[in-house]
Length: 420
Ligand SMILES: NC(=O)c1ccc[n+]([C@@H]2O[C@H](COP(=O)([O-])OP(=O)(O)OC[C@H]3O[C@@H](n4cnc5c(N)ncnc54)[C@H](O)[C@@H]3O)[C@@H](O)[C@H]2O)c1
Image (cartoon, rainbow, N blue to C red; front, top):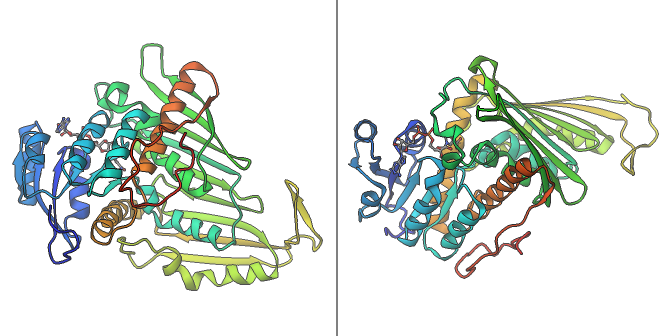
């Protein structure tokens, strides 16, 4: 492997899976400083030749051929979900860095194998959980860290997604290839909820609905209970025309509410009730927009906007109370976080993929744990798999994470909350 500490030497990237998202990933990361795309692999000759031609790389006919190349330091895995775990484990055992598309695996047991391989490999693994590299969500987390927002008690994601390009034969509908909707797509939001709520769920119940008895499941709902009296609801409905797609994440912070639009968030409103000191701090936020929205590796387009309006004495001056918490909060804050709305979705999406890859490069060079590491990937898959079983059984099921087979070399030093 190339000495990752030698900044002048680029990490040489090979990508497996030359489909729709493989091309998207290469376009997003190809001009990052410190990376050189050297090879792509796919059993489909037309697909691999097209991508190899577009990026001027070698073309391999299999993952094994890609992995055997001595000039590949890092592997991006953009194949269908059921193939991810075995490829990630093989690449990590070969000492490569791994950029793995979500989901990390289609079962928690397989995801745990990847986590164990990552814990003992010199390679760094990042799961492409793009929401963890989103400026709007990062800003909400910062406001919570600074105490302007309380711990959320509710996370509710409503996803009216499109099935317009998903023909009946697409692997997406086949759980043996995709893991099912809660795994294939749900992991993004189980991981986002984990980050925003600051905890891992303890139990989950769920429902899965098919359009007709012979048709595939296309609507799923999962409700995950988090410790500390918080609950997250995840709804995914792959039943819409593209033009009718809409997504909303609602976060209930008690004295404040955030409404985040887009599955790739590009716009949010926050309404908060606060006191004199809080009102002053909220009013300082627009001047701090760049710092609050900063995500390492993501270049802002220059028109990001945070605006704050304080309606002083909008409520009665005396104390108010909710869930046993009493506060003096006479002022209502209306904040808007605007990355340009839906028109900027692709900019922010590609930027988040780029930021996730930059996280890998940074950890490979300097050490440290990526934001979306193998443990994040494992946790999301474990919740998703439990939710899938809960929908099948109708039971409320505990979320149990497989224990680590090997911790040595993890380097993260993190407490593995939830391990048994
Ligand atoms: N992070 C995100 O926001 C995001 C968005 C879209 C897709 N994805 C993920 O990207 C992955 C790929 O999705 P896609 O839409 O590009 O799928 P796709 O079907 O368009 O492409 C998959 C490619 O993998 C190839 N392939 C299949 N098995 C292979 C194997 N064993 N070895 C080598 N190549 C193999 C196929 O020939 C195909 O070219 C999925 O895991 C999906 O969940 C992630």
